[in-house]
Amino acid sequence: MRPLLSDDLLAARYQRGGYGLWPLFRAYADRLLTMLECRHFDVVWVEKEALPWFPAWLERWLLRRAPYVLDFDDAIFHNYDLHRSAWVRRIYGRRIDRLMEGARLVIAGNRYLADRATAAGARRIEVIPTVVDLARYPAKQMYSVATKPCIVWIGSPSTVQYLLELAEPLGALTKRQPFTLRVIGGGAITVPGVDVEVVTWSADTEAAVIAECDVGIMPLRDTPWEQGKCAYKLIQYMACGLPTVASPIGANRDVVIEDETGFFADTAYAWVEKIELLLSDAALRQRLGQAGRARVETEYCLQQTAPRLARLLTETGVQ
Image (cartoon, rainbow, N blue to C red; front, side, top):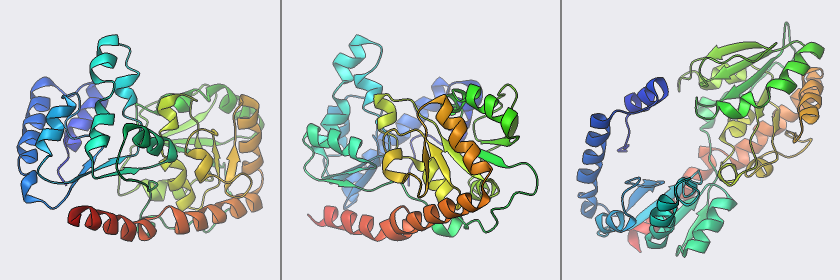
C-alpha cells in the first residue's frame, strides 16, 4: 500500500486545520513517481482517486500501462460536481466519472455509488460493502448494566457535526435516563446536560472501547454526500454485538434491519424514544445486538468478502 497522505499529515489536518504546503507538495511528488511505476504491475488498485484535483486525463494517462480498479466508499464525486465554485463544477464536475469510465473495474461500497458508476459508463461494477475483520471485533457477552449505560459514537472531527445535531434530543433523554455518551475520535466536544466521555481513536483499541458500550448511534443528514456513505460505524457497532439507532439514510437502510438489529430514527422524538427503549431493556439489547453480530458474520466481514475481492482483482489483471 502506498497512501497519498501519511498518518502524520492526516493528524496535522485535524489538529491544525491543514496539511501545510511543502508536505503536501512532497506527497504529490511521491505519488507521481509511484504512478510512473504502474507499468510493472498486473493491476493497480486505486482507493477513490490517485491525484485529487489534478486533471482526469493526466491521471488516466499515468495509469494507462496497467488495468486499474477504482474503489469507492464515499461519494467523492460530490467534492467536484457540488462544489460551491461554478468554475470547479465546470472544470472538475465529471472528473471522477471520466476515471470510472477508464477503469477496468469499479468497486462500489453501496448502490448509490454503483449507480453513479453506471451513469459514468464504467465497463464493470461490483458492489462490495465496507467490512470489518471479525478477528479484531470480539462479540459482546454481557448486556446487563451495573452503573450508567453508555451510548457510543465513533468518527472523526470532520463528521462529529452529525452527532452534535443530536444535542437537543440527547439532552432531553438524559433527564429521563442518565447515560454516558462515549465519543471516539471526534475530538473534544461538549453536549449541554450530557455526560460526555471523549476517547482518542486508536486502531488497536477501537473495537474494545466500542464493545464496552451498550448502544451505537449513527445520525446523518439527508444530502447527496451522505447518500454515498457506507455505514461503517453501524457495522463496527454490530460486529461488537451492540444494537444500533441510525438515520434511515443511504447504506444505513441496507445495514440495519428494523427491530431485528436496531432501529431507525428520523425525528428528535424518535431518537429519544428508540434510544430510551434500548437503554431500559437489556433483553432487547441482547436480542438486537446478537442478531447484528450474526448479520456482520454473514454479510459485512473480511472473512466473507476477501475471497471475492481477490478473485475480482485476479480476473481484472488477466483480462
